[in-house]
Image (cartoon, rainbow, N blue to C red):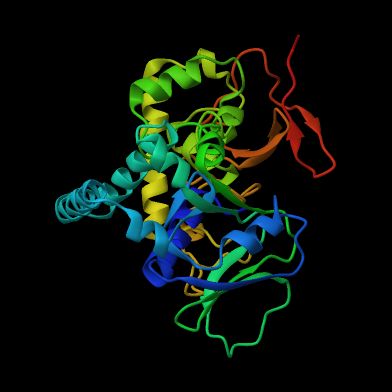
Length: 348
């Protein structure tokens, strides 16, 4: 399943290729993964894709319309120019990381209702979760429709933004106003922006296993199995350790490891484990850097011990039994599972 780096890679590609384009028409096919297909067909035609960004594991297509743009008063126009100038300055001085930080700050501000109620009322977006096998990318109209193309958005330059998903485990929803704001508020902090203090508070406040907390989208938005396993290995923390029992030094180390890994993965366009490709059809390369994920039975790069595959709190985890020592109260062998992995069990 695409995680933060893969979704960020795809969102950046879409921002470069379709932002500013107007949606002329919409054709939907299989719609069982859509919240309200009728709303998508009714509301999207005529709207412009204002910008494309990532929110957790979601792609968020912020939408507007010609009429709304014309109705903006001088104050709103001035505010918009100020934001544009700020974005330009941040990009010039901080690069892509600064642009990412600013975009997420703006999203958080919108979600928390920092803008006026009128702006919240007019906010509109298409929310897309790729699930296991989804892809959203622009195509030339003359290109044949690929199998499992479930949504086609014809753009004003003749191209088509197509959503392809063989397994249909994703989600697509048109949301607006307070409904959009409420949806975004369901999710936790962005792992690339969260401070060490807030991260420690979120982790220490739960007795759940640290692996489960990293995957909990209400704690952190965007982290999945791959980058949770990789960051825990780098920080030398066992995935079965309770969050509340981690020392502050450990949470600081874990956050630093997580952020470093996520940034490097974004730089390498994500991990292409099976079929992930970006908006240009190019696969990611970060899977070549995996230290532990998917390497069960192979030697640990750090100590040489064999990597193991375990289930922690119902989730699969790859870890090194030497570098990532099991916490007290957990047996070292566990029980065999149907997948030939093991499940940690308590001595009690």
